[in-house]
Length: 115
Image 1 (cartoon, rainbow, N blue to C red):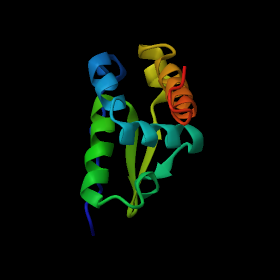
Image 2 (image 1 turned 180 degrees about the horizontal axis):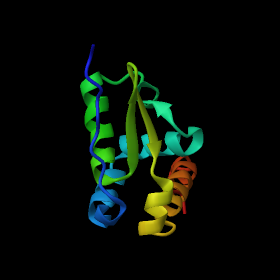
Image 3 (image 1 turned 30 degrees about the vertical axis):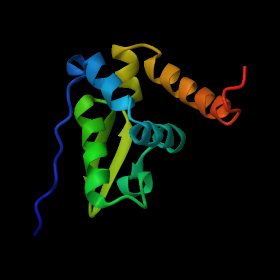
């Protein structure tokens, strides 16, 4: 019988703003967070179906260790969800603001920055 995978997650009071901001500063991880905000809990493979497994594991681990996501094993799947309530308790409105800015940047980025 295979061992059950377990993951360490920081307690709410251990979630640090610099680590969260670092985790959200990388475009690929920010895209993963956007997907999670839209879909809820997903299999990790849905966050980067074209990525090498090692790259996907690196980015999801960084999100987990920073306190942005919660990861759990279910059979062969690795299910991931945002820690929205925990992040809102620690830094009210941060996640919503970052995601709104990310969506706005995508819309204005297509315009080529014309002023």
